[in-house]
Image (cartoon, rainbow, N blue to C red; front, top):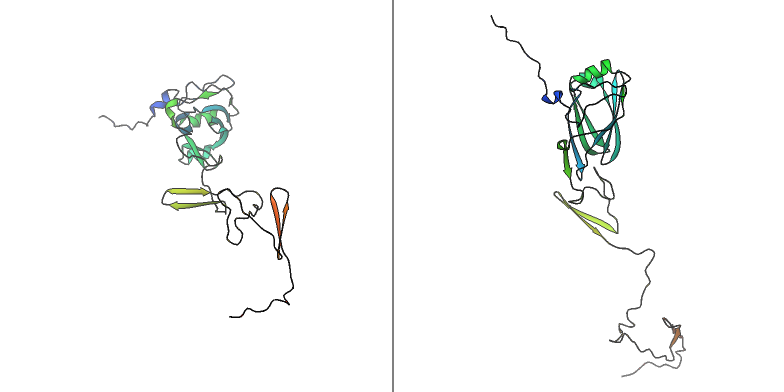
Length: 231
């Protein structure tokens, strides 16, 4: 009688270097299992290809350093995390998602047989693991900040939020108090030549100061000899 057996599922990438371009070799010359890192995906600006820069293995965790479009990033992955049914490591910087590494059963061999092993030879990921976003195609950051940003309105900056659209309006405010320029005198404005004729009198004293200033004084006079008008 034939016995129906159940075979363990095996990721095809566990037989190749995927998602890396070459085999992982420890600094002491040992080859890491092919089914250690079995998948990866990244979201990067301008088709940047991430690199696996270094690995450090402990009996309970692995320290992984990557070079991304945001620079060097180091993460730790716990053996208990894999045994708990979470076979992946999410890579992020602040609140920006950068990518994910997926581990196969070979990671258990790494924890058991590669304790204290290191790998310091850079190994690039395949370009097919990268989703590229052009940094000039839209607004992905504001003043080099990204993720969850909080804006507050000010007298020089305000915005309107409608559905998924944010409209910013910026108003230039000069430093300090602007000068109070004279626009008219008794509602009389300068003529087409930008000129205004002022004549002094017994009650108004006009004194020019330099070429650009003018002092107008009202002179207090006696009213004892001024009689009310009669009709």
